[in-house]
Image 1 (cartoon, one colour):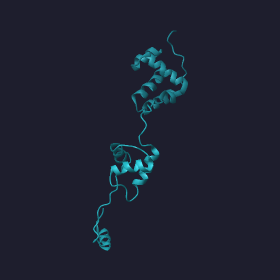
Image 2: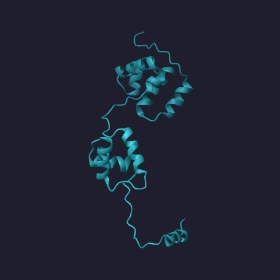
Image 3: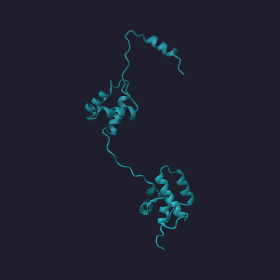
Image 4: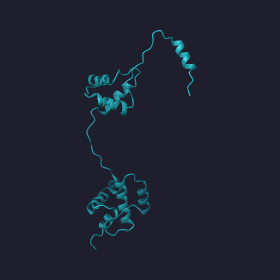
Amino acid sequence: MSGVYQLDIIETVAELKELLAIQKTAIAKERVQLLYLLKTRHSQTISQAAEMIGRNRVTVHKWIQQYKTGGIEGLLKRKSSPGRPRTIPNWAEKALDKRLQEPFGFNGYQEIVEWLEQSLGINSCYKTVHKLVYYRLESSPKVPRPKSFEQSKTKVEAFKKTLHTT
């Protein structure tokens, strides 16, 4: 009979039901649903399964080829685009994070830009450094608050002890 698939689905119906329940994306659910329809014989042909899922027959054939070559992992593998490389590499990001953990950091983001250029040889703009430090590293340039020279250390320690913190 023309159009009848020749596919041995290794997973059981129960396993496919479990896989279907734990899928997070719609595409992954559709792919597992295809296997479920074919395994339970709800659809006899690939064209019928494609119509039930709402996908083109060629797309369903591609999914079946992915399943044949890579199994369920190959079918559910997500493609990721490489994207543009970061202007500040991971090793420099770690060095900057370590430097930001020190008690006296930087006076501002522009000083961080200059430090990156002088010590690590990385050219970057202010906006990039701000986004990296503030959002990604969740830190900030450490600027010590001004202290009075007349301030008594014993009074400061006494205040800290009597300060009510909850």
